[in-house]
Image 1: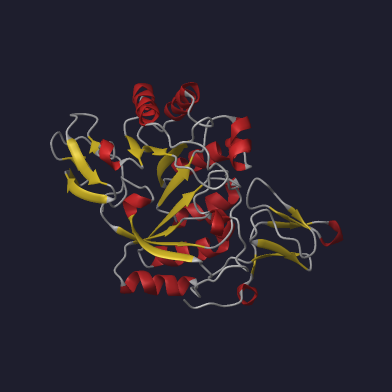
Image 2: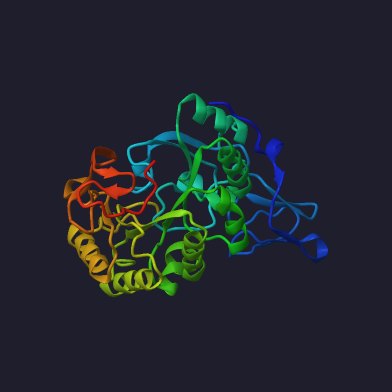
Length: 344
């Protein structure tokens, strides 16, 4: 692995406001950290240097892999294709259940990293004939400048781009990114303001705004809800969440209920019971959600796509593998009903 000193690749950060006494306010996410000289934001990636905010997370991914697109998870976006996935260190959440805490709760200056500016990402995708790039594993918002430049370049080269995100970003930066973004999977952690703060350190309302903005801007959207026992497993909470989604026009948006496994600061909780996942799926379907999936339990068979019109199996999946696909030109091959998604 090629490594470098992160300080050699710092860039002036976007979305900042100078304040008195050399302080600067970061306007990228709802935390809106106020940083004094040499201080770094909650995300570990943005630092005040002489009254100017700089990003420490540019061209220095600490994780780089080629994944099945179903792993994001994206089920209605180029099914069966590969996606180049990358992340830098840092995150603007402090999730108790984080699976990638070793990199999300660290600084780009503390981890070994690839030397991979946007142009090199393009070369890597092109050389390997990979049709899309995902900013994932940690939180893409905190390496926004790297995401933006890479996505803009990818757009010029007809390579699609994806964010897998907690959705905790201010509206202006998100709107500026959307023209160069093809798809997003947003983690909707739970549907209770108090629990959101307890579980993540963030708040619910900005995430709901992100969902609306992505929909309004025409970015293909899928939503993941990790069901954490004693935190986000309440039937009443799941019912409220699904009702909000339907009431706000997200009934065609794929909803992935994902099984929790003990991790990070919640090692003593049990895995999500299967019956809880199945109950959540039934609640969502009853509320009017048309495409509801259950993840992290491939043996259940609820990762398949079924036509809501004729109930025929359209995409059969085993884990991250697509076995059969009966969607042709965005329509069910049996009844010809349109199936929302990006299929080619």
